[in-house]
Image (cartoon, rainbow, N blue to C red; front, side, top):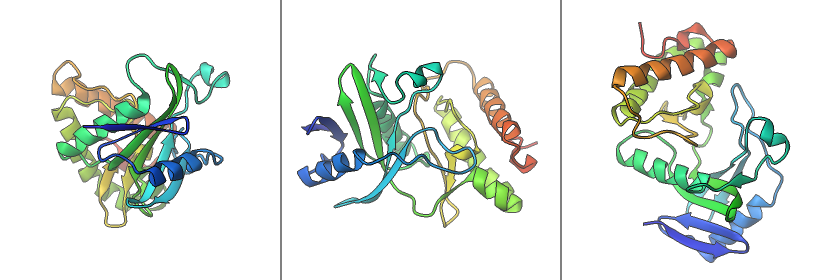
Length: 225
């Protein structure tokens, strides 16, 4: 059950409940300039890193708005059902419980109620690289990693989960060669239709990203020949 605590204008949610010191450290982190992740197919969100006492190294992701509306309000969102960070936090926790390889969720944070800003805290994977960056440097290694990428995606398909922004920039590989899928913001669960249809949607999304960013052909097709 998620423990929700207010602190200094923020609302924090976590499974274990954050301490006063942890909330203070995170709030201080959020007031520093945002550092947008770099690299091939880098994410749109701002990424901050810190060593959180009692947890270790974590990544703090802020949620940015896309489309034309971003020019008016880049980080302010309108709450309809739930906060974006809280939704992704819950989804990551569930995905880990069914053995999908995703970052470990630590906490979610919001500031505001109806109009709000949001952040997600996950455990950091030190020195991890995106599959897109790996492919740009070592095509053979990227090709070898595709088998595990396919296995993870098949697991998502089995549970009717559609990652709406699935591309090689949202696949992380750590120093031990373990593959993680990241950025499940706005992912759809309980997707209707058979698995073949969902598999085709993943394939189209993946191919479009590989082609658009001129990545090596070893990354396609997603599901093999």
